[in-house]
Structure formats: C-alpha cells, structure tokens
Length: 94
Image 1: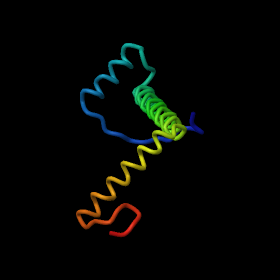
Image 2 (image 1 turned 180 degrees about the horizontal axis):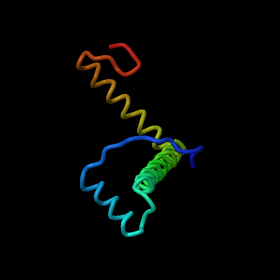
Image 3 (image 1 turned 30 degrees about the vertical axis):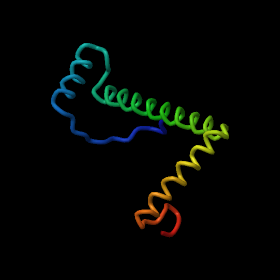
Image 4 (image 1 turned 90 degrees about the vertical axis):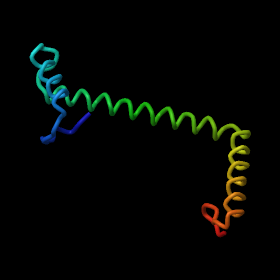
C-alpha cells in the first residue's frame, strides 16, 4: 500500500493510548505503531468503499433519464425561488 514508511509524531487521548498499549501487551499487535496503522488502513478502506458506492449510484442515476429530468426540474425550481428573492441562480445572473 505504501512506498515505505514515514515517521510521525502524534497525540492520542489517554483511553485510546491505553487501549493501544493493551493490544500490544496482550500480543494482538506488535507495536502501538501497528495499531495506529491498522486503524488508518480501516478508515482508508471505509473511505474507498464509500467513494465507490457514491460513484456507482451516480452512474446509475446518470443512466436513468427520469432521474435527469427530475434533477432539471429541481434545479429550475431552485432557480425560480432564488430569482423571486432577487438572488442569482448558480452559474447565472439574477
């Protein structure tokens, strides 16, 4: 996943640091660094999965003409509301 490692310094809440220490002491992790790395890998995987899910839904919506028509109606409605209040519509003049 990485091209090497980067040494950093960080500060953890006391309870999280104690938890990491317990994982190391009990043999579930080789080091506190490994605990933090595993946590970051988990967050990264969650972010990648969420982005993929969003992209899949966007592609699904773009393929459905009914969705495109609904989006255009909503955008027109918002633009009318903004004009009625004397505000500029996104990307346009008032």
